Image (cartoon, rainbow over all chains, first blue to last red; front, side, top):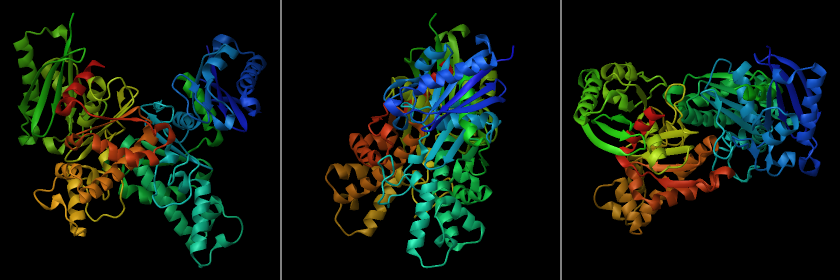
Length: 311
Length: 311
């Protein structure tokens, strides 16, 4: 009998949903709005209704459905409880228990960055590996760690919070987490733009970056045009990111590093500048490790959610 | 029927051996010399003979013995193969296969620092926890990581090589691993002595450290006497170690940090200076995590070896 499962990646704006078969083929993909008002009380009922509606539409039988995997943008304990998720409006929430009661299906939950790593391992940039380090460079820096095929959840559901690795002692600004000098302040899209603004202010040399909006994309585009100031910015970015990845590999000894998120659209040049600073600081066992780009984009989460419930 | 197992912690000078019951009680403990000559060809035969001798002496029946856990000072793959272990003289060695053939008993092998962490989790400073980060501050800096009760072995058997985390860009000397700026260069016994020699050379202020041999112990002893220069050295040590542990906890989110090795004999004052620099750089989920001293000393390895084969 062919079997199916659902992935539900809950974000602050939308809940992304997917219907999968057990081989990792996506059969349907849709999204619903995330209603965060009233402490996000409607989010799980809406998600349950969307899944039950799809079961009805597709005429799936209960015994054909393995269950639902759920991704949450915050720490999730191994038994599916979240203590607090600011951008969903949630306080303490027993996610898997509630969703299971509302659908009658088995549920498992994980942190969104961690399940994205699981998705990339299943059918994406880390396919064929079981020790994986995924970095998501977007507005912030997220991470997902897979050890021997399983998500490293951590004692408080905060495993893989690699955006908050301390990388710089000398910085005035505070990170969103409250600390100073986090990787996220240098390697996220906003961090790269900040590095560029600082470089522009500290120098009078001409640069393509002096025209138009200063974004991470503009920096990498200018670099590809041979812009010297953009090169300095990307060198600094590469030093922070490459050194931080070297530190992570000394601890975790993964098989592959996968880089995703909006910033990774810069492509091979991003990997090149990162590896340049990674290699001299990496422990010998990891110096020649594979670097890959993520392949699933915004769908990594729903793929990983599906894999979570299938495991 | 009461059951037993053996732990064999193979070091460069001696092989430490222990006979345990399945509750973690040590019934016998002894050691044999490690013969590293002739590419260490005699090490496993000697170890096997020592264990078979003990079985005979104690009149243990084969069905009472669960097996042998082995600790090796170098990377060990999940199937008990070591690629190369410099201080035993070994090249490629199928450790568990050979020891199993020589004794007729099931064998499992792990890296010595990793099995020490398992030992501390079983009956030592991390008892009752299952997400553990152990740091061993001795001549070098070793580490053992336990995730959800299991050793984090890594893809090349090099998981937990935390002595080689990059912590300093500005250093001339190379680490034993070939890189520059590794944690081991600042937080090991030799690293602390080096920090002290540098501080003494850069300052003319009086210090107890200007008399006698400069060792990590002398630095902590002088600190306890109120020595100002020793305090500066321990502050630097604490900054490197505390910040590095903060980085590790952002990645791993453990329940407890355990510090062992000869340097940890400094006791509570070492934990205090480490936490001082840990807390501001740790991710919020880990800021109040427990720090503990290792309890099993040089026996952590044989305890961990025993636990490895019992799991």
